[in-house]
Image 1: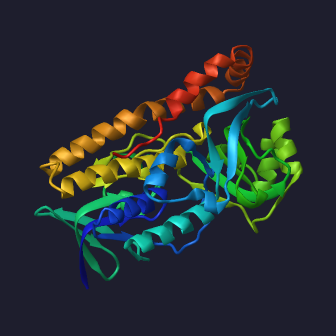
Image 2: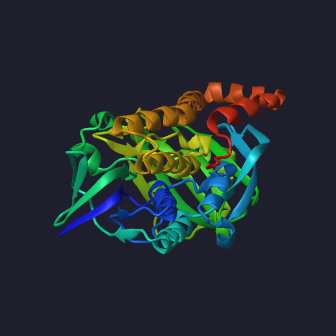
Image 3: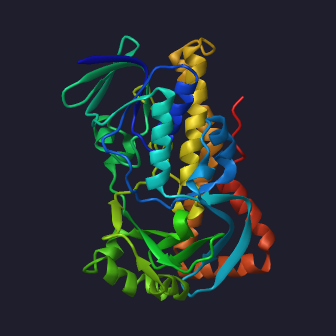
Length: 375
């Protein structure tokens, strides 16, 4: 079976679905290949900066119907429990990937996107056309967008540079019932990692943490690791002891890479985590995925409509715009991660921010973007 389309998107997460809605709303043929069914829980901080609200409104995606939790404050604590708290300039909202992805999936279908549950095995480019192969089908497209997440088998077949190195990071996430301020997103440090805590819809608490695998593997299970390592931070200990997990087992994902990635590989335009991943401590990964979809989709439309005259120009402009918007954020995220993972340095940062809260604003400025407007 051969299927021809203008745009084929590999991966149906936030970036892939947002791009599908954007392009279909503009009258383009779009096929999206996603290996999983909807809805799915995913390892994610589940906090979205309001910087993408104008873009979601442009897509006619009303997140208010999902009853998200509105968040306006950030708290950061060191291992000792010393903490800093501040108002978030733009603010944001908490919503589960289980609910948001399903909502975007329905919106994409309504917009006319063809969504097929299949795993992509290979992508080839020849004579200005892509051939995308699954287990038993072959799809052809003018444009292919890569939105297949943080790390995938397709990264190996494409021989992407970052995939050659092992990553030391492991992420764990679960939903809980308990007491936590609805308007607060908290980031608690512990030895070898940090943990995000915030409310989502239905008064549920999302707890998601990033840890070094070497420290984690010393313990029998997740519960033992949490009690021996995370509980060293008294604020984090209180969160767990006053909350009840509502997942049968927490979700985990390993080999999370924060290394530099190509935004264009073999003419595939990468979006979302596939193009680059900011450290979760910046609390802005979901917004960046949606933001990148807006940048890429707008340029793809210009190319398909003849406003960009060559594929090379499209690829160059996308790489330039992606780097202008996100590269500094990712670099700052790496620096903050290195600082906060050192207990003494983290204590100094907490003390400085407590005495000089005005320094918090540039930290937010360098890890968050301006509201995304599509013209």
